[in-house]
Image (cartoon, rainbow, N blue to C red; front, side, top):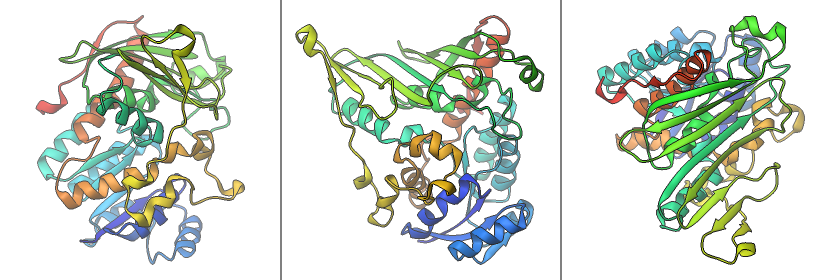
Amino acid sequence: MKINVAIVGLGFGAEFIPIYQRHPHTNMYAICQRNTEKLNEIGDAFGIEKRYNNIDDLLADPEVDAVHINSPIHNHAEQSLKALRAGKHVACTVPMATTVEECMEIVKACNETGKKYMMMETVVYSREFLFVKELYEKGELGKIQFLKASHQQDMDGWPGYWPGLPPMHYATHCVGPVSGLLKLEAEYVSCFGSGTIREELIPHYNSPFAIESAHIKFKNSDLSAYVYRSLFDTARQYRESFEVYGSQKSFEWPLIEGEDPVIHTAKKAEHEIPERVKVPDYAHYLPEEIQQFTTQGVYDLAENSHLSFVQGSGHGGSHPHMVHEFVSAIVEDRDPFPNAVQSANWTSVGILAHDSAMEGGKLKNLPDFGSL
């Protein structure tokens, strides 16, 4: 079975073209980009004949089975909804949407159309996450007691809608791993803002905070998680971390990029408790044709690297894993991970966390997306 895939947005989106070209179940059918020069440059480079300037024209093409959306954040919900209603399966880069209402609309559209939706959350397919998941499933961590994650980034100089963005409006990279490890559903959230970004950034979103830190309570679980985000005026090397504390072993992210993470093992002599570990690659989970993409991007030349790929240090080898999950879900007719309900929950945690911070930490309940 071959699925005709179309990619919308060719900045970060171009990273995925050769993965779809080589995946055994996909045909890299079409690309879509408003800028004609860029569209033709990418189309020529990768030998893709079907090219569209307009997503509506692309969605009218009956040959398109699935779309992978990599457009700016404020277009995600509108384009996902259009694609689902046009009868296409949808993969969309994070976050799912910018409002809780849009998240609800996408879940409803999936229920109405029977089409698959997957938010392409890189962290839950990173080699570090897959490593911790493997430890958990083998029982090595024991009972999980607490989860923690951070995403700190300096976004000065990023274009368009990024300046002044509320930190928690782009929170899925830290909400995803704490929710995703045990497939937990966030029930409510409380968040505090801290510090102040410079004056000229605040009016863009009326959001003053340099850092937002949130506690998440999970439904039908004794667990909670702590996540924090910064985007401007906070000195920190790029960090996209998550940490898991278990009764037998705990996993902690390194403080400096490039160092090895630490496993703490209970009941050892105090000086033997921590141990640095090498995280293996998980390319063997993938079809042979796309295994190479866990360790190299499309843009291997530094001057061609997309900023998100450089800062995110290659997103932990996640790109081919995400593609394989999305494609497999369509072929096997099952829900991808994360599916629409999970994606809505993770995205809404961040949206409601910012609302909570603006109201001094007020508890915010999440909708029950599974009942829509």
